[in-house]
Image (cartoon, rainbow, N blue to C red):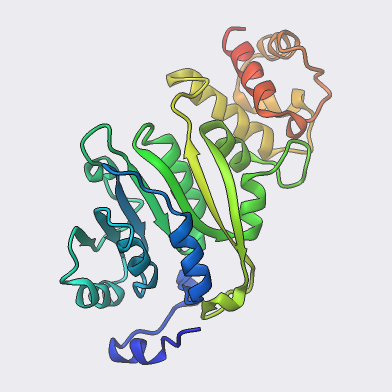
Amino acid sequence: MTSLGRLFSEHGFRPRRSQGQNFLVDREMLDRIERTVDCPPGDILLEVGGGTGLLTERLLKLCRPLLVVEKDPKLHALLERKFMTATAFQLVKADILEMDLAACAPLPPGRIVLAGNIPYYLTTPLIIRTLSDYKGLFRRIYLMVQREVADRLRARPGTKAWGALSVCASYYSRVTVHFTVPAASFQPAPKVESAFISLEPFEKTALEGKSEELFFRMVRAVFQSRRKTLWNSLKLLGKSTDVVRAGIEKAGLSPEVRGETLDLPALILLSKALENG
């Protein structure tokens, strides 16, 4: 393990747990991430949350253009000082959820490979934004997440972990959990285990435009009231009872089934039936 105390003292920085600032310091885990991240020639690397630069050092070894986004002013200053002479390196002080990520993309057919040990409160909004708002922009998305979130991302229908995030991830991408990371690998140590995962977006999705919007409205309705029957859940869509009844029948489903038990193909089929009902 590497102590960060002296580095933090030099820069007048104190990690804030409320901001999810848990820094990966385990060299073995950092080495595993370096071996896992795949960024083909022509792509660029986008690191979210550069922190103290330990992962940044590993990503620079991949010899690809690297853009690091760090929101915290003191950590940004630390990174600027540490990597000011690095080649093919750019550092931006910004909130990743407010950036125009399309402006970061290389010339086609190049894409972005995202990697990051991010504050865990960013996980869901970042995954949803990168997958849904920027289709075709990302080659792969590598993230350190809570192990519980990793379980949700790869959950199967009918399980407690299967929910709206599971559906979103499996609809847009292929999910891989590469390895788990113990709490002791971080400074300060979080109260949970973590996992390093990747999302590989599909080239095409089953739905587009308004059809896709309806699908995710339906998914939210189903999982907001996951213990209710499908018939009762779909009332939240604001459609007439005739349309809901016809859609369920057309999809070959029972109105008494719970939506949480449906897999992705069944949910897509139901959405299409409701749209055309």
